[in-house]
Image (cartoon, rainbow, N blue to C red; front, top):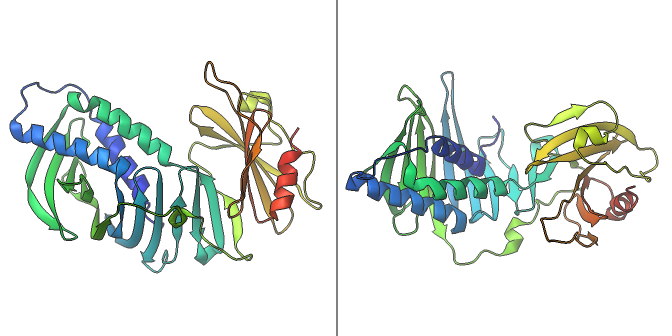
Length: 338
């Protein structure tokens, strides 16, 4: 069983919610209006609330039911950390996203995956939903009240058109926190649910809680490959990426080119180059920086290295290097990009 990513799970629900948006009646019943206000409060809370707690997630499949429990710390939509407690197949896994980069430590595979933050996608979808909440073609109804994780919650049932099934949200009316969520299929069957068993509302969260997972030298550091990625044969060309890709004039002794992947990223393309020897690999991600109208190109900079990662801006390009190599070696590689 793959670990359940709570944030990605929330995004999927928001996407389904967005797909139902259209035109609604101006004289909606009071119950529906109150439900819509609660939903809007929930979406705003997802962007701003600082929380920590324990969660359970259950996925219902025809052949089997999967249950996972996780410890979560979230700073709105800017940073999050999930530590998986069960089942045994994912216990010990850690997922961290600090708003710039994300890490997924998989101890059972002695592997640390490093990628670009996925939180921006949530912000864009949430903002879009908030802008269009007043014109929705759906039925929203307050079904009652329940207590979840010691907090009073209003139960809001949302039934969308176009056969999207049904969603139920348990929302703390005081904070807007989403305490529990259920999704139902087109036939009314329960598909999944996630709920807090413990929750703490926090006024401040120390940034160190979103530091990369600490791993030892035996752990292999590899890049995450997002959906929509395309592998190409050989080194990339400007036709492949939409800009002139740069290549390292220095690579560590014994390393050789292995593969290229092109990935979509916020309307642009990100190029991933992998070099390696028989034991260790180094991935170089690059994209051309296109300044907004009226803005100048960013200054060159080399970031403070994080676990297995060096980031840099040089000559109008942004670079992310991922690997188990010494920091000075990765910095030398990025400085050699031509």
